[in-house]
Length: 135
Image (cartoon, rainbow, N blue to C red):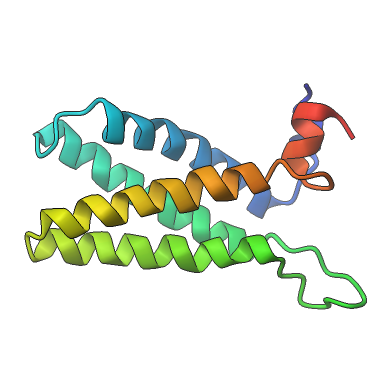
């Protein structure tokens, strides 16, 4: 395991990495261990949504252009839309006091935006794969 690929990565990758790691830790704590509705839960929820929003926006700038795909978006970029939609849904649910929708959108954000997209980030050819498994 080496952080060398991350050190030489574009700024968007560094920002993405720097926001997604704490978002994963906070999201895990929020879903499994925090007291729902408590002030600390609300504070960390705000931090989590901010981190996830920055993570998604940074991901827009992480591209792999090729002759057949000059724009460089890959299928993993669908999670940018999933993440931003779930953040918006979460905020709407909280403002309308719909806890059931809030819970569902937060679980969707965690599963889609972190677990599924995160797993795909370890695919061969991606920087996370190079960090953990080597080139």
